[in-house]
Length: 72
Image (cartoon, rainbow, N blue to C red):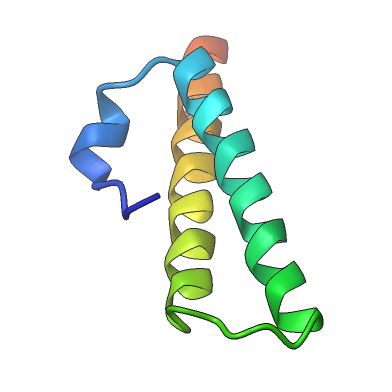
């Protein structure tokens, strides 16, 4: 999966964000498994990109839940 831009993520609803989050977590586990199995990694920067995208999604989910609760 490629990097998802912040503007694209803002357009998604919570259910879509949760599904993307689960998909990215699975992909991250697969990439980490390749490293631990001493397999050849195609793109070493891919793990960093996945982790950053996961952080973006979690931030957006937290902001959306705060907005629903009426907090600042």
